Amino acid sequence: MDEQTLKPIKVIIIDDHPIVRQGVRSLLSTCPDIDLCGDADNAAQGLRLVNELQPNVVLLDIRMPGGSGISIVKSLLHQCHNCKVLMLTSFDDDESITQALQAGAHGYILKNTSDETLADSIRTAYHGQRVLDPVVMDRMVKQLVAYERDRTRLAIGLTDNEIQLLKFLAMGYSNPKIALAIYASEATVKRKLQSIFDKLGVSTRTQAVNEATRRGFI
Picture: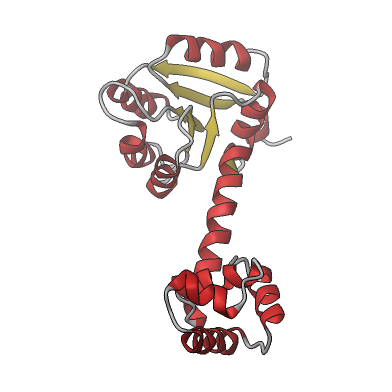
C-alpha cells in the first residue's frame, strides 16, 4: 500500500453556520480515511487556513461574511494547487451552480445530502472525479437537453411561430381553425405549414407532429 493511500484525506470546511461545521465534524470523525483538519466561518479566515494547512479537499459554502464562496474559489485553488473545492450549500439555483463550476469548483453538493453521500463525495473529489448532487445533475441534464433541442430547432430554421403551429396540429386543429387562431387566411396557413413540412423533411400533418415530438419541439 503506497504512502498516499495510508494518509487520510485532509479536509477543511468554510461555512458561517456553526451547526453545519459541527455536524460535518461529527460525521467525518467516524471516517478513518478522512481528517477534518480545520474549519473557518468566513472567507478571509478560510483563505488563511487553506494556505496554512494545504488540505486535499475544501468544503465551501456560497454565502458567508467577508465574500461569497464563489468569489474565493480561484484564490483557494491558487493557494492550494492540489486541493479540490466542493461547494456544500443549500442554494440549488442555476446561477449559483453555473458560477461555482465556472470558477473552478470540482463539485456541488447540497446540504440536505445524506452523511454517506457527503463522505463519498469527498473521497470521489480527492481521487480527481467530478461530484454533482443528484438534484444538481438532474437540473444540468435538463438544461443540456433543452440547449440541444433549441440548437437543433434553430439549425433547421423553425421559428417560435412555427412551433406554435405544430402545437395546433398536435391538438388536431384544422386549417380553418388555425387560421382563426392566428388571424390569417387559410392560404397563409397552408403556405406556413408547407414551409414547416419542408424544414422537418416530412409531407403530412401526422408526420410533422411525430417528427416534432420526437425532436422535443412540442
